[in-house]
Amino acid sequence: MAAGGKTLGFACICGQLRGELRDMSPAAYTHILCHCADCRSAYTHLGLADPEKVNILQTTQDRVHITQGGENLRVFRHTPRGALRWYATCCGTPLFHTPLKQRLVHVGMNADRLDQPDDAGRIMAEAFIPGPGGKQTHKGMVRMVSRMVSRMAAKNLSGEWRGTPFFGDDGAPTREPKLLTREERAAALMAVRK
Ligand SMILES: [Zn+2]
Ligand SMILES: [Zn+2]
Image 1: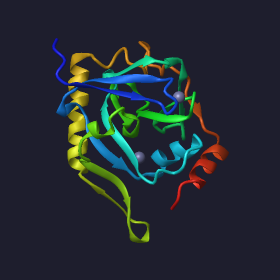
Image 2: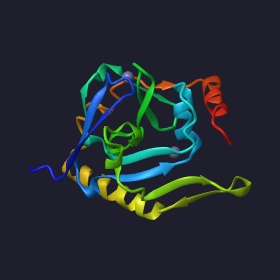
Image 3: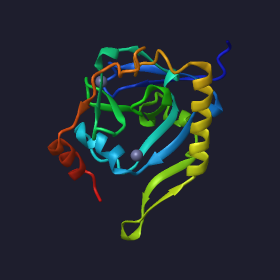
Image 4: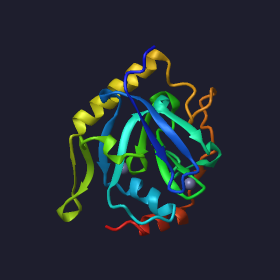
């Protein structure tokens, strides 16, 4: 089957973990910004500064290929039902977040870690934008969700949800997710500016 799109390289901050997003046709990904405390506290938990908004390339897990340093991949979650937050343990770079279930196929990648960040293209949606009085708003969410659902449906039909860096054939995550303690979660949230 012909690959329909470009290949985008990525790496952790120190460069030990490297990989590629393959078959990145225009429908294969959506570039968004997320302002939510969960995304931001994934950074602060790893000892990085609060990014205030997180630059995310949404795609499907089968497109992610780790080509070097895969032994550095680790995963945690903030809460028992929270997304899996995948990172490079060599240097503490947040790299991906996935749902807990393999068949959902969705992955959000840290778009700042692309070799060419401009390849993410224009921002199509923005989530949890802080507003006056603590009120949060969203932009472009209908389009974002409909693109995500189309990708999920296509990959479930084609069976391409198997054999990704994130889940084994048994459907379990390839690394044991570490559940943050209440103290760790509180500390990560404390470092997120309100
Ligand atoms: Zn690294
Ligand atoms: Zn978020």
